[in-house]
Length: 562
Image 1 (cartoon, one colour):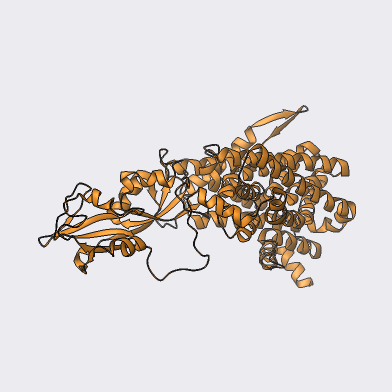
Image 2 (cartoon, helix red, strand yellow):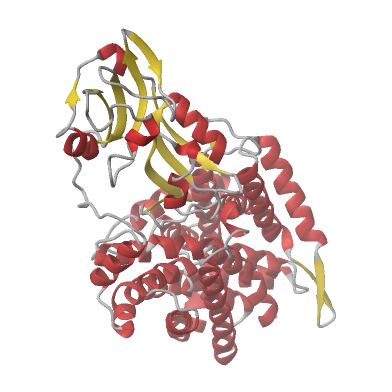
């Protein structure tokens, strides 16, 4: 132990990696379907290391990884943040502001009642509302207070202690409220409600975990017979003969020659045409009344399967039904919609938003034409635009320092952390319009977020370790129950405000509440109980706004308590 203590004191960076390893191992353990997660696990591991060993923690290292994390969060939510108020999205955005505000006011009231210091109050807020990034903005705000350095260090340590104490109850509270208590209070059956909302969105349900051996979209060749339904019609007219399905004539063989088919190409008896469509349409509808032909050369069409980043303003807000009617989506088929890492259910009334990635399949020319009309093909890339990232963080942090205001005669700036968050939002937003600007691969963004936050809270935990026992004795049981109050009040008020004031459909409301708490595990619980993915629509509409609001509230709670 003495050898390990000497090593960690000499090489404190090893303590951080040790906290990450132990923290993610512990955080990923499931007990009754619940796990702490890597971030909270890293915090607890850091506290344990700080209790056992004296490890110096670098303030510069903490700031570095936290700014990286905040930029990654802002970059991810940027495309959605500025468009959150469009269509019905404003309801989710309002809820994502309302619940954090209620949580902030509740935390302030509870902290005043219990006589907590700014560190305990900030940690209670971040843990009870399951928003660990608020720890960083709170620590920065404490660093700016006009108090002795040793008092600052104690307050920052109290943040980690309070967050660790309140987080478990906060996480369980969100999960239970969204998946069990919320549906009962609203008087709904989650599975029936999911089916109703899916019908409204035109979503056709498939069995979870079951996949088919056949391809969902195919190209087949058929011969036009004399006097048949397609004989003498244009390709466009022939396509409309298949009711209830999108089928397209791509090219044909006539007198031995292969010709690309346009919408006005006239078909005649003896032609062999290539038709693209869903498997069931080609087999179940055309197959019963048309002669299929094996023509390998005619069917040798270059296929493309790409993700297309939506950046065009005229596409933003359109439903899939409206999008399918456009000429530039002819013979292109949608496989899935990805919105900030979450798959969105596909239905006729599903709304496409700027920043979505539409995964489509079709002939190469058709997919290229579709990409030009919608946005930009997301080409696989492992290169990060460090020029944009570096300058954005610097400019955002400088703005955070320069943007100051006065409270009770004290000049207060929003801080480098909030500035980096805003820089990420702006960079992500600009990229949604200029996809080649400031490009950061999805994997790199996830790494920024994971290592940035987890390493930061691990270092907070290491610094909090020596103060842990004294802090628990000072505020333990009151802080624990106070955190429960801070968790429950915004959940209950958000449930009724969202249902009866904002008029949000119940299952979407439960998804939005999990988004307003930025807690994906609660969304997963709703999806599991409802046997449906549809709640993600509410989650995705709220989480972008809530991330920004809750993160900045770390600063606000410190100012209120100071």
